[in-house]
Length: 210
Image (cartoon, rainbow, N blue to C red):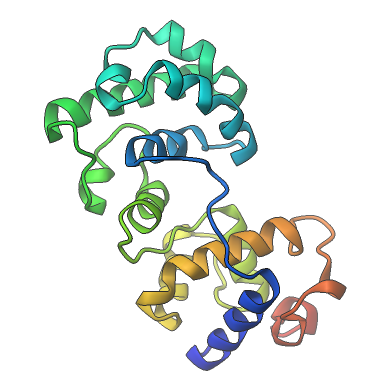
C-alpha cells in the first residue's frame, strides 16, 4: 500500500459515506469511557440500549464509583459478559476518582491502566473524546485492512502500524470511522457486497492481488 493509493481509497469512501460519526452515543468523556468498555464483544446498538438507564442512575464517575455491583449488572446485562463489565466500569470509575481526581486521563499509557481499557479502547477515547490523533483497530478494521491491501496480518498492533504508516496523522480518526462504516455496511464478514463497493477497483481481495 502506498500513501497515494491510500489517499484515493479514503477519498472514495468519504465520497460514498459522507461525514461519519461514532455509533456509540455519549455526551461526555465519562459516558464515552464507560460505553467503550461496555462495547467489548457486543454491538454499539446493544450498548446504546443499555446506557441511558445506566447514565440516568449514575451520571458521573463519582456516582458510578460508589455503585453496588449487582445494581450495575442488572443495568448492563443486555451487553453480555455483564458481571465482568460491571466490575470493570465500577473499577474504572473508582480509579479515575482516586488516582486522577475525577478527570479521565488523556494519554494512552494512563488510559490503559484503567480496568477494561486496552489499546483499541484507549485509541477510541483519545481520538473521539480528546481529539488526539489515534487509529483504533477492531475486528472490522482488521478485516478491511487485509482485504483492501493495507496489511497482511491479524495482529491489531501490526495492522495499526501498517495503516498509520501510509495515512497522515491528521487523518487517523476519519480513516478509523470510514473503515468501520465500510466494514459494517458493504465489506461485511460474510458475503461482502463487492458489486456496490466504491473502492472495488483498488481492492486486493476482489482483484486477487497476492
